[in-house]
Length: 313
Image (tube, rainbow, N blue to C red; front, side):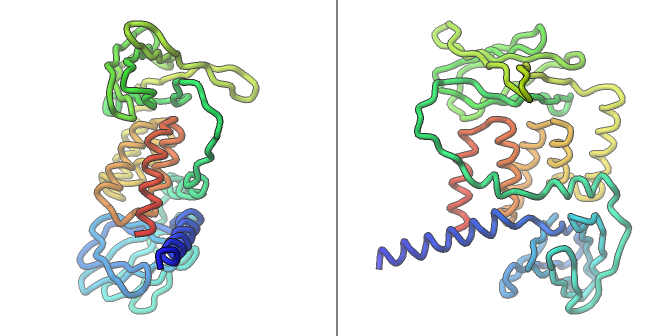
């Protein structure tokens, strides 16, 4: 019986991984008003309280005096869901099994572009393990953008016995040792784009430095940019548009931050959204994508294992 249970659990896990790894959302449900519910399997219905990503096979139903909108990922088309309707989600379209769904104003190029980033999640659900012992080294994101609202830098902690020095341009920050897997520190405003460096310290001595990286055969330094001027105004205006359409805490904002190389802001947005929306477990691989960009391998591996376990339960 014990062996049978193990085999069944393994089969369920493989099936769950195949579904979660290969499926990407068809669209997103938003601007929910009244009683709106969804189901993954046609039997268990759950109330939609905020934005909800929809996958092929899902169904959505609206009660009396209830409504919602849906943006389709691949086309950027918007639809209005009307009261007393039952809608099925296919590969790239909606179908009204009861009531009605009608085309609405398109989302525009920006929103379409943000939606299209929600694809190809499978590559972030598998860790390639190496049997070779690796030397201790610092890894960090190659290019990152900061702003007044999002001034934080992060990197993978190589050990609780190490403190760090972060240098951005000509300014150096002393970063104390921490037990956390992620080292996080605030950066002061600076001008334009600057090279940044990270040094790990132990017993007052330099132990290891962030090494330059190679890209297309060239050796390059890690760089940080401070957002200001017209670019700052443009981004803030776009973020307001996203908030007005999809809500303040939205995966769309995380996607937009990715497009601007604001990787820590994107990570924070995704983490908060998934914390507030525990039913959105299928969207977790997109947070993994940001972890990989930030070189946060330890937290990525830990949360990936927890995510795999959650798929079984």
